[in-house]
Length: 468
Image (cartoon, rainbow, N blue to C red; front, side, top):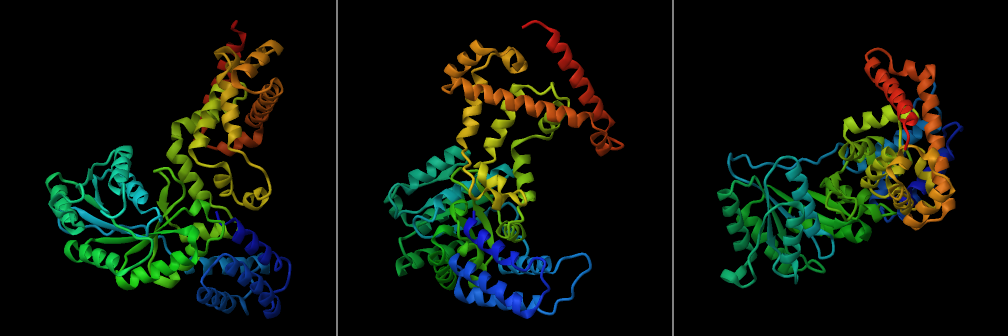
């Protein structure tokens, strides 16, 4: 995400590296930063305020020992970006202070913004945190909106309150009121209202939303906007907030946004925090918005914290430790283990997205062809091997390679290349496990893990002596 602005911003700030800070060269760099922000579709007023803030902080700044002047300016820009996007993370949801009564979340937005899907994602997130949400189909305007919400509810395992249009006159306010009563009876602690949208903001829409807000007094009103529409999204957010006071914004489709204008503008224009961001189509792709992490991504610094959090969601600590033991014992790491790691990596999402979270890799990868299909190809080749071949690739001769190639739909050359690369990984990791540097890295308290590595290597040697 934000590939275009990241490239432009880092290029502009690179001009300050190794140079003495003066007002003239800061102005030169900031002119390029201004171009980058405007090209990213950031609000013009926001750009001016941001540049004034950066210049005020940078000019005449006291140089710190051991830190290059250019790096100090990068830090200034980083801090200003964080402040622009809201400062601290604000993914809190205001709870109902009355015990035993549900917290009501009202979701609103224009058609096509991803509002209904975001309702499903939010319901899934709450359920995974131990809550009992209820989804409410209050969009009686869009054809198939009710059925879409029902489908999403089934996928995330959350019940949906829905009435067919016309039943008891089917007015959205009445639907929401009856849904809340049902939530109280069934002891749901969250109610998520999927309200109607329009192709554009009009009086009828705002009257309907205003009536729901007036009658139900929701504890949270979230506006869902499409990040890829840039300043159109920001303008919608401003108008919504003027007519229907908001508690926060959910930005969708951020994974497809190469510019970043909405993310950089919406807080400054509306004064409302970005609560959550949608980073993919799947229902688990909703995450809290962290201004500091996003600023790091924009400046090419990566986002290791988010990457680790994502990894922890798909890889258990036990599996990670087991993989480390097998990797560092060399021959103990088999194609079965490799296949398991590939399947875990797929759960992290598109390769380019999560590799870009590693500091320095984002810019390096921008022109490299990275195909997620490579993982699928590797899976197919490994799954076409016998159990014995996965444990010991040394037995894979020419005829076996041909059979694996036919079974996986790939060439014998691709199979041979995979085996060669796998053996190289085994050797590198085995050498690392033997090195004094590695042993000292564990230090006291890690003796148990080192013993497990030694035992794994010993077990692997016994396996190799057994006939296949």
